[in-house]
Image (tube, rainbow, N blue to C red; front, side):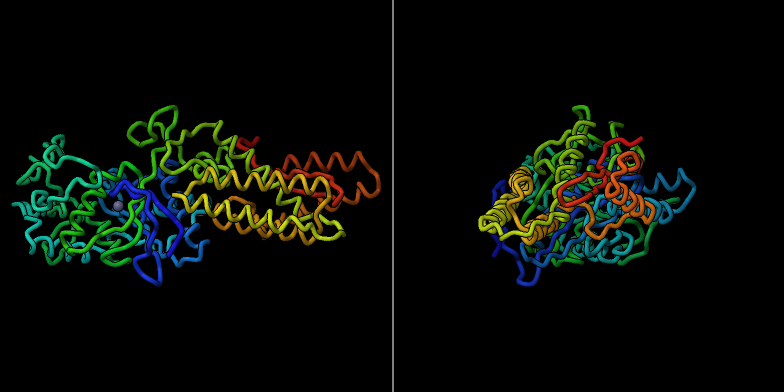
Amino acid sequence: MSETRLQDTLTGELRPLVPLRDDRIGVYSCGPTVYGPAHIGNFRSFLFADLLVRHLRWRGHTVRWVMNITDVDDKIIRGAAAAGIGIEELANRYLEGFLADADALRMTRPDVLPRATEHIDDMAALIGTLLEREHAYRTDDGSIFFRISSWPAYGRLARLDPEQLRVGERVEADEYAKDDVRDFALWKGAKPGEPSWTTAIGEGRPGWHIECSAMSMAHLGTSFDIHTGGIDLIFPHHEDEIAQSEAATGQPFVNTWLHCAHLQSSGTKMAKSTGNIARPSELFEAGVSPRALRYALLAVHYRAGLNHSDESLAAAAAALSRLDALVAALATYREDRSDDQTLPVLLADAREAFGAALDDDLNISEALAATFDLLRDLNRRIEARSISTDDAARALELMRDLDQVLGVLPDPDEDLSPQLRSMLDERAAARAARDWAASDRLRDELLAQGIAVEDTRDGQRWRRLVEVRRG
Ligand SMILES: [Zn+2]
């Protein structure tokens, strides 16, 4: 049993998360289609899933997190043809870029990153079952469509009237000679010049929607706990996933559906089609700290719209600077005195408030508010020298504990280059010798290298700057 409650898109209710199995919680996230670099709107959705997984693990659950890689679809085929390379080469190129960005943004590596092309037989088997059960039919060109009229529950997730669906898709209907304009492709019959696979249901390639049904069920079972994605995937992608999965298995597909709101830029949705996109690697090259970008993308509740701007990045960098300064202060704090008797309660209450906020449908704003309340209180106690050396260590331990979920603090094992380390030593020596000119010069040189030095009662303290723009 878990105290975590989540807002399920299908029922529209805030519901307690009751794991379906004793041994683990299964989470599936629609991953990238690797036909180009992912933009930060995509990463907002991936990082919200990361926050969810981190929180559930922090709460003591075992989580199996699966994120698919769509490595065959129309866009990849067009992109590969335009570049004069195979789809595998194109997909590998952008998968590598995706993983590099994800690592920079400290996204937990999903336990499984299945590729669609590795699961073609699973998809064919699922489609075979749908054909047998007469939820699907074949057209003259070898394509196979899901018959929406055979599935009365269709439209529940998106709250749509089935009769009104897909009227805008008539062009595709003509192209594939569907029985009903609403029906969607499970399988596309082989065409000259397109990649195809020989399977039990014929030669061709999968439609996009069936990929996620087959891969999620292959790795998490026919029914699993949580499915995440961007709000734009509710219809038709997730609606189609539910229909084809439940029609094939006769079992409920997903227990809880979670959808992340759009990332906006200059007031409009960030999307490749609108051209107002920002990519992580471009922002990093422009001097944006990956930690600041992670913070900016996480700091707003996943169901609320988030506007990406230089100001939001600057606010994230400022918040991180305060956290970094606290962590650096706690790490160097030395005071030989008795322990502060009120500190354990402060730390326990802060942890409680942080966890309770995230249990409430991942209320990150309140979790961060609890973190910064704690920060202010600890800063006051450091300033007043009212805590002991051991107290500081305990407080630092809690900050690191909360960061298991947030993933924004500097790496505790991070060390400086030998060159920077010796500059710091040199500066400490200069101060000891009261050579203020040398000490100031070294401070400026370190600052130019992104290291802020501060002189405190606990000695010289350093932290890395979290700047939005460098240079
Ligand atoms: Zn998907």
